[in-house]
Image (cartoon, rainbow, N blue to C red; front, side, top):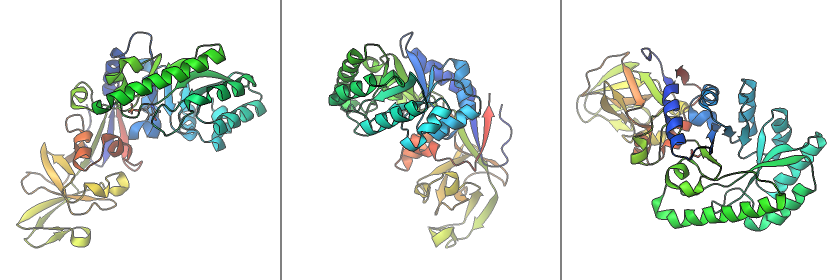
Length: 369
Ligand SMILES: *Cc1c(COP(=O)(O)O)cnc(C)c1O
């Protein structure tokens, strides 16, 4: 049970995480490994609490985007293998210091990592080779296989633990043909590299929507991020998942307004009638972007919808509570298990990923187990 809310908090529910992990695991065949993506503070929640719970749940791997995110996990006692999806060469010593495993995605990055690992007298240091199969973001191309194999063969410093690629549109059913071509491209690149290596690394290509929509892309391991946090990128999957994070706050003050009075900066809202506004201690510095202002965003008070009026301030929003029976100090819900962040995000023309990862460190995290 959560306690009464008296300030802005992000509640992080670990039993919902367990539910989502087990649901996603049930979608892949036995023996396929689960890599859990905990980048960006576990999608804006609490990376340390989440990583510990994922360890207990039986996750095989964790992934972060950048090396300092992995360092934080190590410093807090996380011992699972940690893949760094997009490491920068400036951090390669840090990668090795904290026993992190880099994804190597270009010739420049591969050669530099081999140089640093050699300098540090490493042998068989675990690395991951990333192919671009159509996202055109990071990764080697199919025709790079010979070059990669040569560089690897010339050094004992590193050992390829896995070969990976990333899907561009696994949530988009109109792009099915493109996605199937990505899966083919990855299969070809990976098999060619395996032949040259003479050993069999783990293959992985699927993110959450890949897990749900493309069993043919599960390979040996799947990488799930958004699904763990309770969003499935589609209504039919959302109903089986439970959002782990609830953003709650309180009413700081109520204001009675007369027709013609304005609310907030630049007088962006003007009352047409007698009305009541409530001021809430959450603003764009907390991650409620200005895009949610002027009626595009809303909160819930006693289960009723209260639209944000006027501009979002740095530290506050004001909402229309004219038709809601409420008092100063009452609880406010921005999103939770029932009033989903993906609906709110959609309303403002963005996606759940952006809304949840934006919740800033100023908002207190409360872990519920
Ligand atoms: C962020 C990320 C994921 C997780 O994607 P979800 O859609 O959140 O499941 C997987 N793989 C890579 C390479 C990523 O960058």
